[in-house]
Image (cartoon, rainbow, N blue to C red; front, side, top):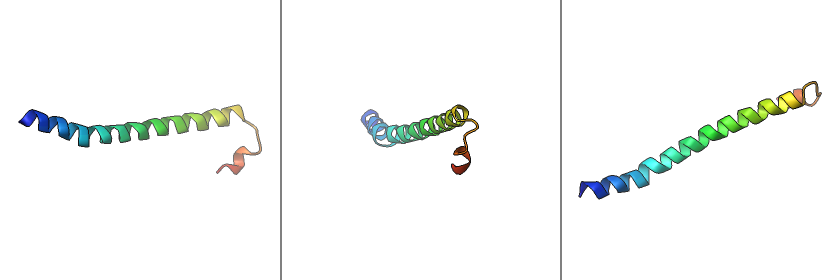
Length: 52
């Protein structure tokens, strides 16, 4: 009886939290890398100063 309860808890609690945390971490990594790439590719542009 304890086995099915552990599986239900894992499906309802653990997996959604893990997906949310993983998605947040991936979003931060992607956002930072795209920001740095944009600054690198447009170095010297006068528009970079306006993106603060």
